[in-house]
Length: 449
Ligand SMILES: [Zn+2]
Image (cartoon, rainbow, N blue to C red; front, side):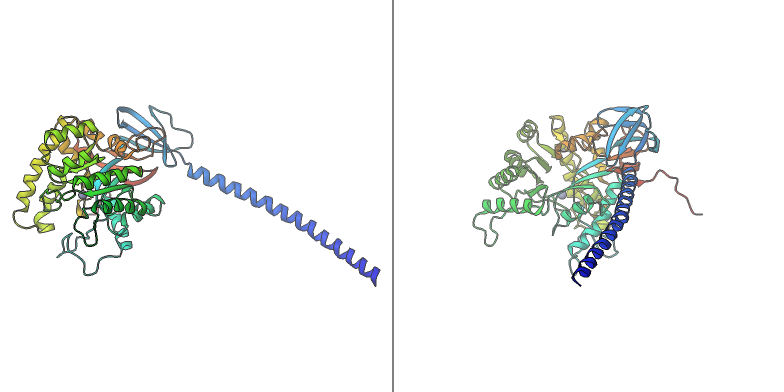
């Protein structure tokens, strides 16, 4: 029994070993096959991801100069080469846009992408719904504004004021590739003065706390409403003191971020410049000393002239502004344009900011027509929407130019924007963002009879 048991045990062991070897053989084979399959799948997906695109332009303005018969080679989300009469790499997908002019994806320095209005009759953009939208609803609706910006050739927005974190969510979902939209640099909710607010005994301490709260929440930028002014209200009375502005600027810079200060009027602008803001928004009637300091400090100026023209055009039918608002807006536009012109002539660095809201999305680049009117060359104007914007964002090595190593944010326009600036306002035909074609109006539209 004992021997038999031993034999039995040996037999069982032998059986087990045999089975194990068999298993090892088949298992090993299966394992090898699986690895082989995995490698094949990886190869296929890598070559699919790395699908090289070669885009041909009759003319390309890369942000600095014109390249004739340019071939732009794109791999994944980046540009790998830009060459005149360039060779198309073997196996590359050719996108022939040779009848168009290529320009870098444009950047808008001042938008409100989460301000959504569906245009329902009997409502205005400012009609408060009975129950405010859940923030998730706002995020989904905001995509429409983002798409309109993309269709206008705008691939990046700096968005300055949103409620409930809708801008953070939209930015993150776009970056994750879950939603299609422009690249976003966002501020979360804009900050105001905390003087006289219930429970606030130290308004400067509160201002610093609010800056840190915004940055903790995920803001790229800090936005401050330094004065009154917005929509039909063109009063520029300063609301945030110099001391508060200075504290907010310092707190933002201490965390390695940048700050934008809104001021409709001259006093708020003066204090924003003195406090060392990175960008100044709106700012009409600035005095010469303030303009000189802005130039000296290299502070970016976003005059947003066209947004009040948009309000004038929509005052009656869309917004139903109070009587007299249009005249006030027109007067503000005149002064805004005069101030911006003076600043430009003094050497200030201007940027396109549409201040787009609601049905204003898609008109983002109309500001360029004002810039040309004030004396910029078309190329200078285009740079206020591309390379200079990238510098303001601190992204001058990856955005704003069609150049190797940059994100493949590229726009095709019909016509020559260096001869007629309206070409970038009205004739955008094709848009690539991060290597993906997001707008294509190059195909002939079939008309129904
Ligand atoms: Zn604004």
